Length: 489
Image 1 (cartoon, one colour):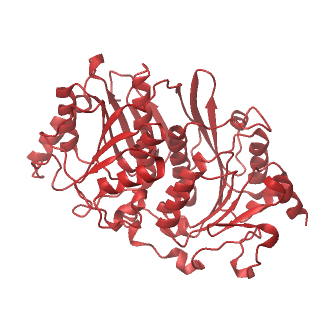
Image 2 (cartoon, helix red, strand yellow):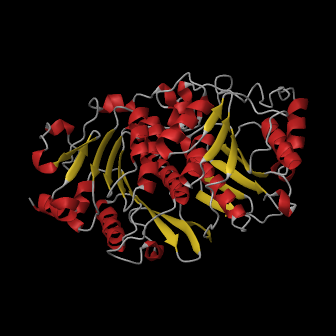
Image 3 (cartoon, helix red, strand yellow):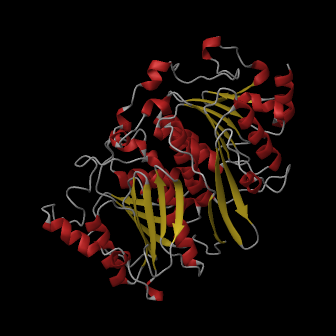
């Protein structure tokens, strides 16, 4: 009864709403489920079917690409329960959708609301996902008991009181906690992440407490929220895989972007893993005029990281992603199911986002951007790393191809007997996931895709960024590095 009273006290509207499956039902009329369908906290979970332990451990074919990563333990994801607390929709929503793609199947979420398109994506990726969404703020210590049974906790809340409750809850229950704080003032914005290991709490915890206890700072920037959610999900994966937790605070801060993207015309080359995050981040930043190039079709093994293709296996990627952008985010996107090559007309575009996965194509895009005098944001990812480079022809900076010596890399690759670039500019080997299966996972693409758009906003705001590098090392954990403009290292 104490638990129910506390829950009713903290929820909006005078009574609690619990999302069972994906339908909101008033708590006072919620049917009781058998005890076998309850988490240890007493929260009811339902989905389109019950998830037993054996079933939760069975890998789905969509996880094939991440299971190529040495030491991968899919069953530790599928049998975990992750508690997520927020005070706004963005980071928790991104985390839910990407977590579902990764293979996490059980969530307890306390947040005033979630962004519906990402709830839809999560459900489409895994119809058997189990989620209890408690719609409100966590502002009483009694409510911490609702998170009993969670394998790990994530705190995206920007309320100081909630931060303190979760630190105490994690310590008392010996539960690992990842805290993400939005950093914002008049001139700067960003985020800070701290991973707290039970029994090893540090004085840095004080830096993670939001300034206000009862008035949340709105995380109004979905781009940095996307990057932060990706980093949090990578740290959660590390914890569940029993890897060392990140020992230092991870921070990203830069001058607040002032550029408006509504009238910007952007070409996105590649609608795969990076494109699935860079293009939505563009749309959520206000960019409406987006054109995507990609000749590939969706394969089921893409779905562990290309989250917007659920239910579209066999469709062309570029039109499928454009349709999602238009439906979910009111963009005016178009998708061209054709390759980008030396004859592609770039005259109509203000900027290019290079989201492809072969050095041959990235070299071609760099050359074309230089020829046409176009802004270029180029990026690449691996399972545990990635980088973003911005090129602005008006500033006389080197192209990404020059910065990373891509021509030499391609020449060495050709000399070693690997295929030459095709006439389309896409390598016959690396252009399609159907041809070559490389290890790949959602987090690095989510993080780097968001930072690509942030780099574009910074450049257009007169704050040209240096190359950004992300890494999740087995020994040291998460690391973000922003280098000088003149050096890639």
